[in-house]
Image (cartoon, rainbow, N blue to C red):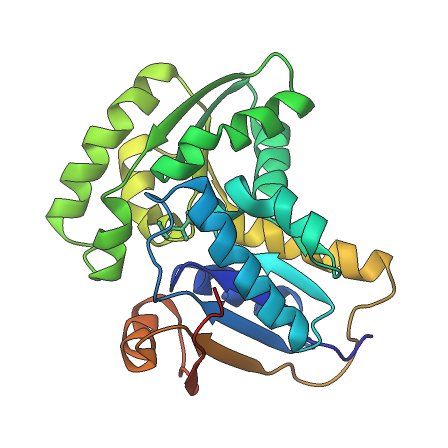
Length: 266
Ligand code: DGL
């Protein structure tokens, strides 16, 4: 069991930020990453569609013998996690609970803002998870649909990114939130501009680090964590692996290995 890989999936590229964090936190684990580039974006799709794609990916990862599936996508975690846990036989971990836990522990004034895709915001998954831990918390949610294309175009450092972020952050600043959840795979890339706008007194909760720590704790508690060897990474995309590889260079430090094509059985 210790030698079996961990499966990680996302609607596309953004989950590479989580893959990266998992690789740092669990350097001995083999990781298999699936980016659903044929069906991205999930953020503006229905719950039924997101669940169908997520189930097909999870079944593929299960067929490769993974010991744990990490849903790196916030939208899929928010909308499909319960169904995945019902239908898939290996444990499935999402990004919402670890992010909510961290935010609830971090906030001093009980005011928390959640940034996410339209799908994540509509699901109310983060507020529900935060209120379970901090019933008094005051939560606002802000959908930031333009952030994903900005990151994918590698425009995170351009003035346009700051202009757009200022629009989205106006409500967040007005709310007095001292903790902001970056509830989408792509948003950690925009940390510098968000930090500039929100200031140092606001804590940005990055779902990548929190999830990686939760995955380590989970495997260690079950005696399933790999303890030796250098973990390797295998990448799959459901469409245009060459484009995936090129854009992945914006998100990941270091060299990107081969990306294999795997069409989903939907
Ligand atoms: N991966 C998605 C998320 O974390 C963002 C991109 C998309 O909309 O598919 O919510």
